[in-house]
Amino acid sequence: MKVSIIGGGGLVGSCAASALQFGRIVKEISLVDVNLELAEGQALDLLHGASLISDQKISSGGTEQVKDSDVICITAGLRRKPDESRLDLINRNVALFRGILADVKKHGYKKDAIVFVVSNPVDVLTYLAIKELGLPANQVIGLGTVLDTTRLRSMLAQRLSVPPTQVQVTIFGEHGDSMVPIWSNAQIAGLPLEKFPGVTSQLIAEVEKKTRGSGAEVIKKKGGAGFAVGASIADVIHSIALDQRRILPVSSLQNGLYGLRDVAISVPTVMGRTGVVGCIEVDLWPKEKLALQNSGKVLRETIDKVLGGK
Image 1 (cartoon, rainbow, N blue to C red):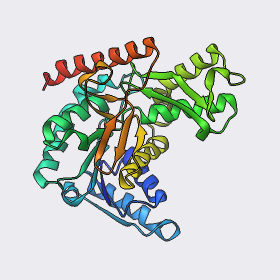
Image 2 (cartoon, rainbow, N blue to C red):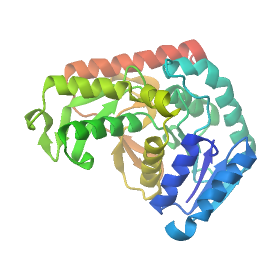
Image 3 (cartoon, rainbow, N blue to C red):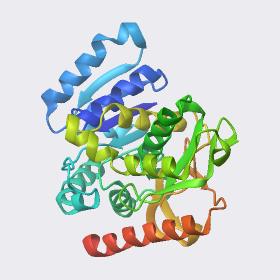
Image 4 (spheres, one colour):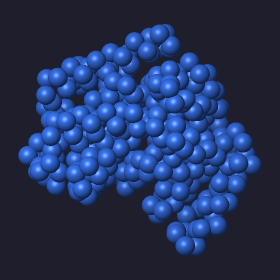
């Protein structure tokens, strides 16, 4: 499998490439960037470590790289300011993103290619990609709340001194202010979260608050997220490459699930080689379902305002 990362010269794109290299699953990683020299430098840095890691082909270049790619991962975009919400980015990023989509269409792509949007605001830009690329909706996804979910799990694990991989709690909805942590189905090592020693409503509220502000905190302290988002991107791409049919909270077009319609938003989504294999509606607390529907409303209003509903 060949993965092309548009924006591969930047922090997010290069961290994703590194995570894919260490994952040793995809066959080729191509770094695409408007700054060709930067993309070449990142590719060279990856190549220098190849003998210690894996036998993948590492390449770089312009948007022409996408024409034979199995996954086209778009990470390029203007960076969010510390006091700026992800949705505030949209007016600054839509024109840039439309230009990227035009380049992708100009060079062409495989009929079964998966387009994977990471650029923010990811849900709105995923919707835009679905509408403008002409691919089947199941072949266009966004990173959605995959990153938010791992942040929540990891910080909860730290507070409870348990292994992060044994924490199961997921965030649905918008990758942004209206995200919805699903505490009703949360578990640690298969045990209900509310019965686990040390868990209190105050602890849950504190971890949720820290998760909601964690993106801005990372931007403030180091300039932008890299390692965790790179690992999140690789996790989704590996599920596609291996046709794993894993359930992930990626952003995908919804038309009925939980009452959500005509928005790209994160719900339990089965991911395989063809992209979205299906979505699953699990039982939620009434307040969680209402919050998820409100999240969809927030996104729909933003799409109508910025994209004219198109």
